[in-house]
Amino acid sequence: MFRRTSNMTGLSYSLDVITMLKHVDMWSFDVFALNDASGNHALKIVFFELLNRYNLINRFKIPTSALTSFVESLEMGYSKYKNPYHNLIHAADVTQTVHYLLIKSGIMHWLTELEIFAIIFAAAIHDYEHTGTTNNFHIQTRSDTALFYNDRAVLENHHVSAVYRLLHDNEEMNILSNLSKEEWRELRALVVDMVLATDMSCHFQQIKAMKSFLQQSEAIDKPKALSLLLHTADISHPAKCWDLHHRWTTSLLEEFFRQGDREAELGLPFSPLCDRKSTMVAQSQIGFIDFIVEPTFTVLTEMIENIVTPLIEETSRSELPVFRQYSTGSDGKQSSMKSTHSEGSCSLTTVDFKGFRGTWNQKIHQNRETWRDQAGKVSHRLCKFPHLK
Image (cartoon, rainbow, N blue to C red):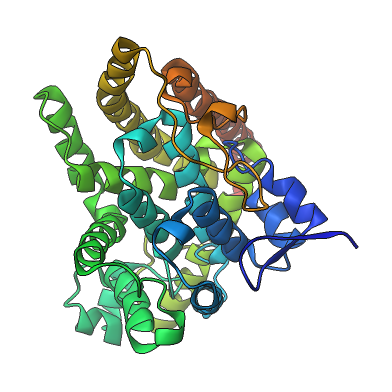
């Protein structure tokens, strides 16, 4: 078997994995196939690969042995509760989606290396040790985690706190050991903000605040921009191709239904979408797309255009194309952005806002119509056979 070893100790890529990583710059990247090819290590592969591509391992002097130990522990934490949805595959998917948003929109040119490191790190850890139950379930059952965090962003607080405890208590896996004090504080502040902002109870306030920024033509606050990027990636599967979206939906609903089963056992009322017998899947997904996903992507795109357009204009005036150091291969070799011709080309001169908007907009429209077709078939069946209700 041919294998290619990266420049990082402890990681080698199979030929299948190498082939799949050639598509890591694409929107509907098949993270499930990568997970199968890598033996259930999609998060490890994506995290290593992106840190390497952005040259963050060298820039922040991340010890490779610590990186290997950390990611292995990270994957173990994601597998702790054997969740159908909130698992290491979801973390890998969100991390890859963040990467796509960074390179395709051109917003990576607005960010420092530390900020890029922060959002990739935050994406990788954002659901660490997720219990497969909601914050409200923790609150209603008075779990230790809910009591510890006083019912506020229960899971999100745990995700980021548990990871930092992991780094603090185990020097052999402390990937942040060579950051300066200032870098460490800035990275931590950004990561905490981003992970806490993935709490869906913050969604409408987050969207409202960003709309206000854009309407008043104020300078965009970087932590808020990064938080919106991660939040969008976290809820992005309805904007991916149908096969991926449908698989994610099935996994998430199974996780909800398992919570519903526990609620029934405990005599608690069913949480939304948690009753196996009454949940209308197609209608719920249409509502999620219409009221959550599409508005979020719309605001994200407006924010990106607001941020990146002045950078493009400045580049045009200088007549010097701006490139960022970035590797397009899985062998760890760095290449100038000028020679990059993948879908995720990172030159400001190649940013295509229309294409970026069209990519997610088309998939959202297609998925919505597919769900409507399915909802129509269910309604027809129930009208024809009312005893099925």
